[in-house]
Length: 93
Image (tube, rainbow, N blue to C red; front, side, top):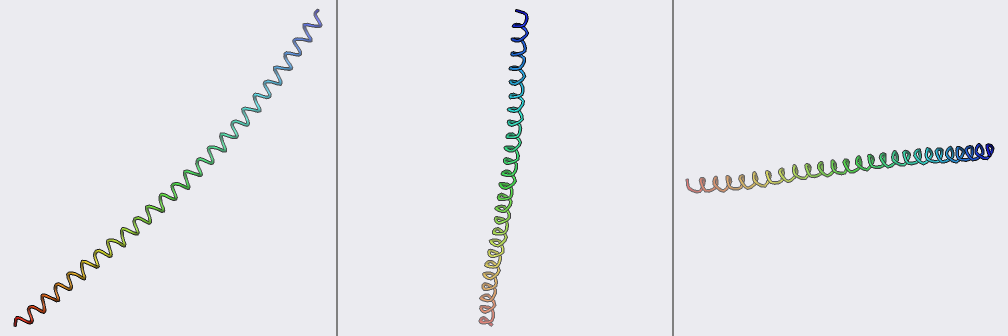
């Protein structure tokens, strides 16, 4: 009976040891997957930030061009009005 008890205790100890090692391996794999997921998320955030930066840069460039075009149109219009006014003054002399 004593041998049977010792044998049963050894069996349960072996099963517990194997289960503990499986749990440890599963924890390692889970940690590795979490690490990879975190890296991938970080890379995606970086890519999205780059895209957003490019869009802001493009928008700023377009705004600059729009302002430049608007200013040129306004200056041309003012120049035409001045020439017209000068003609009127010359004609009235």
